[in-house]
Amino acid sequence: MKILRIGSNRCKTQNKAYGPSMIPTFNLTGDMFLAERLSIKFGKVGPGDIVLLRSPESPRKVMVKRLLGLESHSVTYVVDPMNSDRCDTIVVPKGHVWVEGDNIYNSRDSRQFGPVPYSLLEGKVFCKIWPPKEFGSLMKSGMKDPDL
Image (tube, rainbow, N blue to C red; front, side):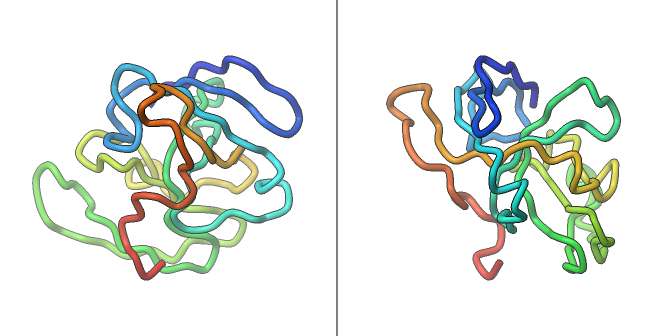
């Protein structure tokens, strides 16, 4: 999922998301959303939150993904959903998080690059603002596991 940063300050940022990795939460054509930065700074993010982060593979890119695990959490994931049902489990190491796109069939995420350093998180998405018919809160919607 590609991000176009539209406006930004120390507390919040307005962005536009492109790409298939967060379908159905975000559309292919580019949804606009707001993200705030204070939750990251004060450690107030958790499983189910949608986060902005620097790509661990390409630091000039900003990504949007769903946070599925914090340090010491055990996360079970489908290794290669296009070719098998094989699952693996990992314990997220200290100072890291586990992120995945909502569209596991077309997302580059922790399943490929592993746990992400917490320091790469840049914001927590809280509201979709475009398209207007989808305006509203994105706080912990669409979680993969309701027990998180």
